[in-house]
Picture 1 (cartoon, rainbow, N blue to C red):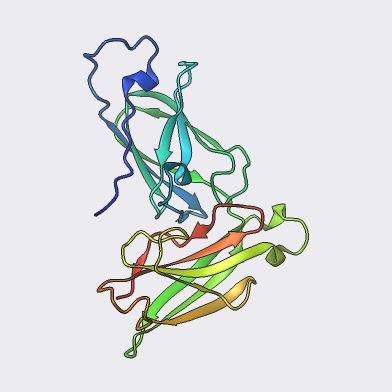
Picture 2: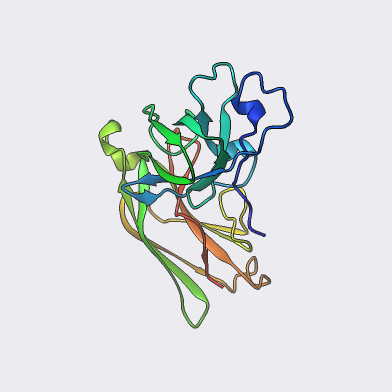
Length: 233
């Protein structure tokens, strides 16, 4: 079942003195992506809500109201129903696999609209390809590149903590929800590959399998993932 990441910004979260029950529901759809170099950033989407509540919306002028949590799908997309007005979108500190540099987006909602929220990850996964041969061997080739390399002291590739392939029997795949995990042989930047048999005893019994890559950075809890999962069986 596809998990919805839509959120409803009720008037009690947006308007002071909203004591009446005759306000219409918000009708303006905001959609967006978390991006780096105009490409979506893949994130974790299982576990507690706090694991994927990485953005927050504020409506300037309504001081004292709680921020509106924005829950991001594993492919880096998000959506929210909002009232017309001016908003500020921020990333929660420590919530993502990127440098906290205080990025804020200000925008006016006057109807349906789409935005991109830029971030600078520590490392990114590029050029990933998932292929399965006639023997049901899955081979994943990819490249690890530095994102915020100018903000890391010392040798950047020494700060990679993990590079892993996760496989699950649903489209939701991450370091909490998986059936099998295979670690890369080398924790370095550059081109790499990971191979695993889909006839493995832990995987063979499932009629459908989905795969995702993730790279972790030392001292940073959230990992960066490929955007969404790929069906490999």
